[in-house]
Image (tube, rainbow, N blue to C red; front, top):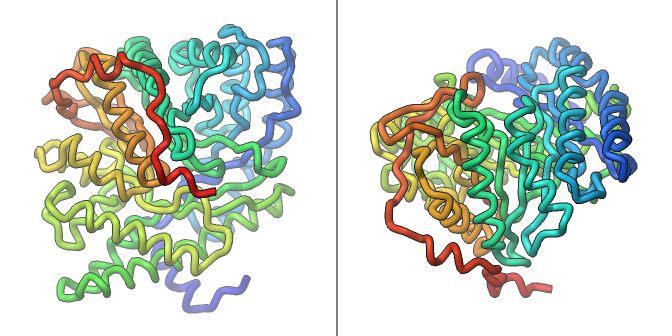
Length: 454
């Protein structure tokens, strides 16, 4: 792969002026050979494999960052779902293995590890139940290990029992981390139709169809896209706007692929894929919401927001796929509330509501992400919100997710503060109309008609 002088100069400009960065390099590690019915032996095998495979990740990522002058913000690890590795239905076993993972992550200096994952879209095994039972303890006593649960898919439908179970896990986890505004829930993602090569946390896990070990790169360039649209000017029509986004995504993708392939080569692992999701931060200028504003919306949440976000997502994917055959993961635009300065302001002003966010998630990369709600929101209401988002994923045959924090002791008008990339968020109102009878029916919502495609 060769780069022209013009491409190199444009990339330097995006780094210097537009906050272009590699948001994460994530090392995927298969743990399928670490399974053991003895929890202590299993924990030891998992820890040893993480240390063996990941020992050089942080140091060599820093070397690549210095060599190319391209910031690499996070180094992370993605693991085979732990529910496939711990073969006994004992919550204590999952806690022991999770603590071993967390200690190993600290030793090799990675900020997050994904893979405390259960797949219950069609039903639970006894091992899944034990793992989920241990989840509040794991999320409240580890700092780096992230959890995810697959509750729905277009092929399977929606596990409503699972939605209700996970709403109670959310409440328990929030209560155990109440002194930090329920931050344990920021490490828990609930999925419909997840991808198995997502480098972003907290929802990343390393699928069983992946290689022994590979590098997954997450590139983030909302600042670069915003600046390109500013240079385009206010008189350009929306077709020109889409074309500009597509061209900018092309350049971002080329930069990310260069870093990912070089890092994979020096680590001696496969290059897995490049995820060019526009993932924002709380820093000014590094915001997906500000892209929507540059398109002409006064604030995210204004009428037209869903249409603008659809165009943004589509143009990002088109530009990335033209630039590389290795594009994967989610590759679109994230709209987390707490992690995006513009989205925070819109929520504080009441310009964006939970219901409008739900509509926007039908066209974005993930779903209801990093949303703080009153701590007294019932488990039944949370389960219904989760189910609604799962339904969007199933009906549209796309990935959707939920990461909600029922902040203990907080009410509408208050805020939560997590710091770092997790940012802060105002408490958003949730409908008080009851869904209790619907949720308590339980069972499984059948797969939609579009599942019958084979």
